[in-house]
Image 1 (tube, rainbow, N blue to C red):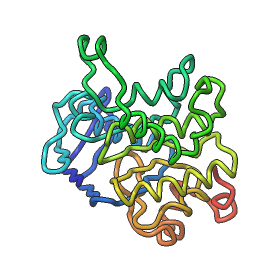
Image 2 (image 1 turned 135 degrees about the vertical axis):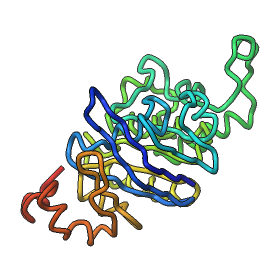
Image 3 (image 1 turned 45 degrees about the horizontal axis):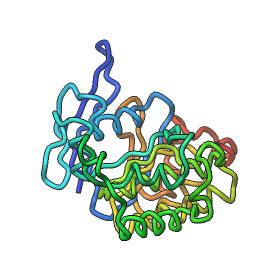
Image 4 (image 1 turned 30 degrees about the vertical axis):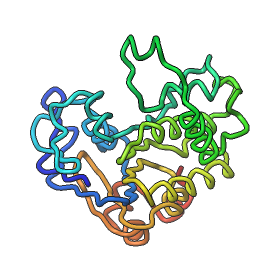
Length: 250
């Protein structure tokens, strides 16, 4: 699904990202971990068209993402949930989901838009998947932080994204919300490619069914199963710290 080659990003002469190779299979959930400043968010910025790389290629389903706008990339099927939920807090949950629905959004299309029954049903089905079926007519600003995270995931779902980029979904969540979010992402990866950036190692352990990628100073330090990464001495030295600190790290 995703193939990266010699991808680099430089800011003021400093390389923030330098990936020689990165691949993601269809319906794979990949977790990316690493210290602050490792290049994790920069990587996602490149994939969604927010940041232009200095060099390299990024092929999504055989088509190069580089040089395309954020809108073009979203239409190709790459959706992103940012670290801080960016929902319309003054609108209801339903209206937020309606705005996220994949449809023509030009001036005339918006002026004469009429919600079809199947579109309304689709919104309700997605709301149920993210545990918001009872909050559809609540104002988004009244939701808990975790629920706002779910709402943004739902918006990405409604865009029919084949690849979902999820940035720190467990941040600020209660333990119960974190567990639900992990189950949701594992379920979504049965239908979509999913890349998750996360710091909470308990959450990483819950969702890392396949490979974990460790970024340090913009480069891949290592990749492997959760246990392999957790016990890798280089990862411990560069990111996790001692076993006791790794156990409590958020």
